[in-house]
Length: 211
Image (cartoon, rainbow, N blue to C red; front, side, top):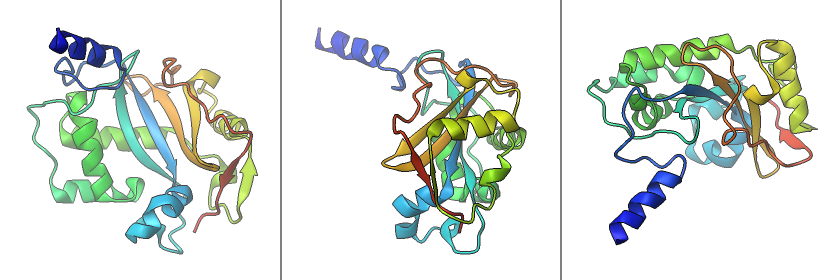
């Protein structure tokens, strides 16, 4: 009975990886774009991360391309595909900030796509190129505070194919954390499932200036 209960709990908790998570079996993607200055202040500065160096002019970076179910998501799947080399992961640093993040995203999410590591990295780059960053946030030269909805509005205006339900903004404390955009398996904009549509509840968020 105890093991049956544990199995039921794992099944009902979205996002928890179970033995049923199979590589290649998912419904859509979430492209997660992280506001680099916020991550640097919260985490990266303490790590002396390269992306946080002054003069790098880094604004949004790709946090990941995540396979999703219509409810929940797979992670840490088994795959027959080989892991990427250190060089292949490091080559993603220009859009992800570091090769370490690229490797971590492959292990947790990329293996669940059923793609090869090379194809997963290539698809992540394709997804990042599809979404245009609003000009107002490019090389932001001062700290600003604004409603999360205004961030969404800017992305929708710059990317007219996005829908209001196809993008969500998250925050960490008072700071903008991420912009998450939902895409079909062939990288077309689509509405996010309800469990992904969890916008930041703050009235305003801080976007620190680009370094």
